[in-house]
Amino acid sequence: MKNYRKWIGYLVFAMFLSGVCLYLSFPAEVIREYLEGSTSRLAPALGLKVHGVRPVLPFGLKLENADLSLKEMPEFSVFSADSFMVMPSMRSLTLRRPAFRLDCEAYGGNIQGVISLQTFSLKGPVQSEIEIIDVRLDQYPQLEKWLQGELTGTMSGTVVYVCSAGEFIDGSGEGNFSILDSSLQLAQPFLGMESIHFGRIDAQMVMEKQRISLVRFDFSGEEIEGSVSGDINLAPNLANSKLDLTVEVKEFSSMLKNRGDFRISISGTVAQPLVSFI
Image (cartoon, one colour):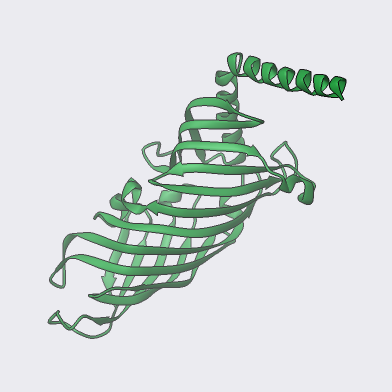
């Protein structure tokens, strides 16, 4: 028993010493360059910039201040995270292929999930299962630019997505989202309103063959309620994706002079949307 405990002690000490040595000699710059290059191979239209990489015991990596943007429009940030931790997932045992667990702090909330690969070469299908928890919309700057007004609210939901290397927009998947206590500050008054408050927004989206279809998009609040339907046809440059959406407003609050149903069409592109009454 004493010899057994002694060898266990040696093993624990060796693991601790190995961990310290790995941390002190960790090739952060090499791994950072590898991650940025791998992103370009997986999705050529996107570019990843990471300001810091450090190890996380037992076998993880933590990325600090990571930003994913469009190569043709570097100012268009697709996703930005304060910290992004990647670790091997136990689901590798059941899936029988590489799988990694993600834990990300971004936009005042948390994003967790599992990404599984066909092989470590990134050539095969990449499947992701993501959970979004309490992400604040006002901290995502692209929404304000697109909507031409500040959008607030807390979003939670799930995303399942499958794609191949270099074929990000050709993938397929589904997303379910809920947004609570949201408000939109309008750039110009709309029917006497300078802002619109939504108590709740529920959405279900399906992506297939470079198209995002709104299966469900309902919004409700004290002043206004309705739904959105239609599609977004994706382009390699996401800012050039074409919009074909219809907004149906079911009713106004009795506090407003105008009351009744009306419809709005949203066309054009993500970068330059065109809004008109139907």
